Image (cartoon, rainbow, N blue to C red; front, top):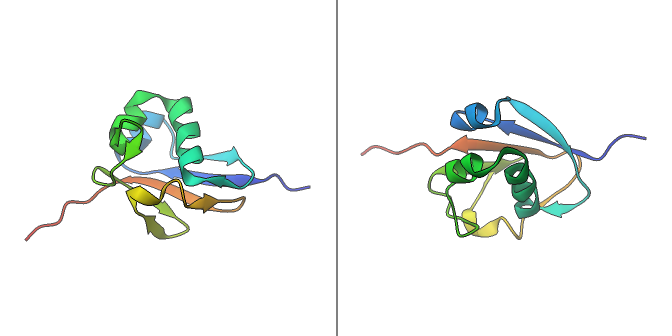
Length: 98
């Protein structure tokens, strides 16, 4: 029987903080916020600061969270469901120029 896993990839400073390019986490169906908490428990406050967590809330300004190629807004972490086979990427936000 195949394991129920989500692939998590780290880009930029997240790779440095976590010490790896990616990992595979066993999950059932869970919110993206639950997955973020699991990664935070594993890698600590430096991961949370890089993500821009303020009082447990993700504002989406310092980092981008992408699920299966789609950017997830900060306010949607609790609503967005991740399930086995999904791919989640944590990447620094890119500043725009004008």
